[in-house]
Image (tube, rainbow, N blue to C red; front, side, top):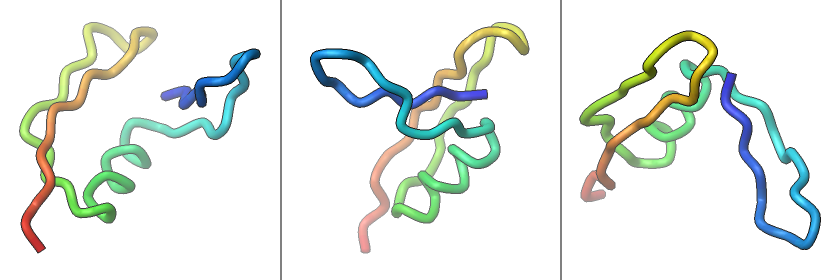
Length: 54
């Protein structure tokens, strides 16, 4: 599960994504995913992508 936290005086959770939901959201937003790495199931996921020309 991925936690997205917006910067503010007090951190608050905005939305929780699964890795698949996050990847789909990035693709829908016009990004291509070049690399995805998660050291283990209970660790953060690292996604490298780039904005696709529209």
